[in-house]
Length: 164
Image (tube, rainbow, N blue to C red; front, side, top):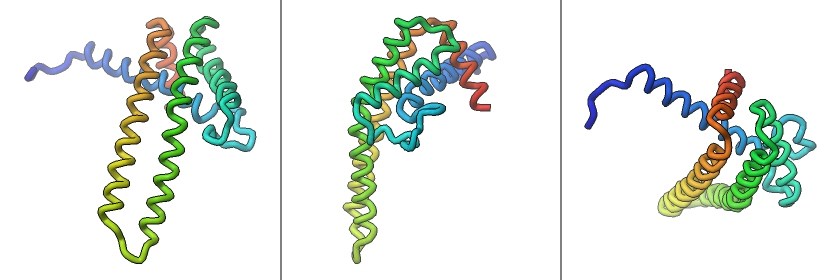
C-alpha cells in the first residue's frame, strides 16, 4: 500500500478529470433529460418518445453543449451517435425500473409484508442500476475520446461554472 500523500499537482489532475467526467456526463445527461426549450410538455420524459424524437433531442443537446468548445461537425456527429446508442440501450432499463417501482408499491400494499420479495426487488434494482451505470460510463469514456484535451478542459470549466 502506498502511504505517500498526493501532491497538489496530482490532486489538481484528479479534480480536473472529475470535472471533465462531470462535463461529459452533462452531454449525455442532457441528451437523455433535455435542455433549454425542449420540454414542449414532455418535461424530460424521453421514455415516452419515439426513437426519432429522442434522436432529435440528442442532436440538439450535443450541439448546445459542444458549441462552446468549438467541436467540429464530425465530433458532434460522433458524440451524438454515442449518446443515441447509449439512449437506445438505457431506455429499456428505465422501463424496467418503472415496472419495479410498481411492484414495490404492490408489495407494500399487501396485507402481509413479504420481506423476501422486497429484498429480491432491491437486489434486482441494484443490478439494474449497475447495468445502467456501466453503460453510461462506457458512453462517457467513448465521448471523451472524441474530444481533444483542450475541448475537455473547456467543457469541464463550463460545467463547473454551471454547477456554481
